[in-house]
Amino acid sequence: MSYARTLFLSTLLGFAAVSAAHAETIAIIGTGQVASALGPMFAEQGHTIVYGSRNPDRDTVRELVARTGSGASAAQPAEAAANAEVVMVAVPWDALPDVIRSLGDLTGKILIDPTNPRIVGDDGLRDWAHDTSNAQIAQELAPGARVVKALNTMNWRTMVDPMATGGPVSVPVVGDDEEAKAFVVELVDAPGADRLRPAALRAHGRRHVHTLGQCDHARERLQLLPAAGAIERRQPPDIKRTHRGDKT
Image: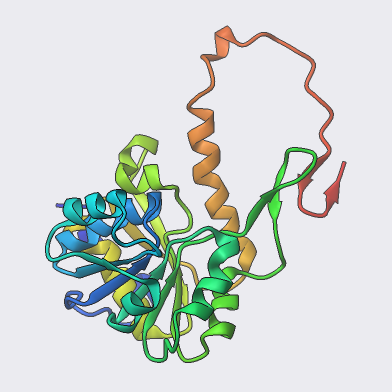
């Protein structure tokens, strides 16, 4: 039995989850690594996937559509979104506002945001680009959409193989629409994705979700370090910052 199937979702998330995610047309805007990881997984659950791409006839897009199977297709982003009940914006975080503006009316659609607004400062340290979440920005730009923040706490490699980073993997699901959250919980809990495990995250603050997002990237990088005995002992460098806003 999978880890996901053993969860009592209604207890964890505070609402009654539906028994199974009914099949929907899911528009995944973007054809990069995240789209390539999640599209085939969602298709295995019976959903129809349409990739939104500015170049839907490009060879790499055609290859992704073929690999996804199950009636998948590709179209211009606005067309893909218009014909879908669920829209995932799998694009670089700084492109999200312009992409959402280009999609047209998203009223009533579930809008999934898997992005993190991260930048690398001049000192080489990662930081947050702004003091809000992209999900909040998405909701402001598409007020009629049912925005859900999910799948931003892992990179595409973990999506493909969660056990490679010591899984099972918990997936925080955040949003204000209970029915939309229930659908997304089912989406990551369905048999085709039973390597992912949803978890409750009731605090709607950017730091909670963003900090979790950093953990997966940090764990991956730690795995690249040599064994402890092979590390040359050196004086640790000066620490310029331990937390956003904290100086040492």
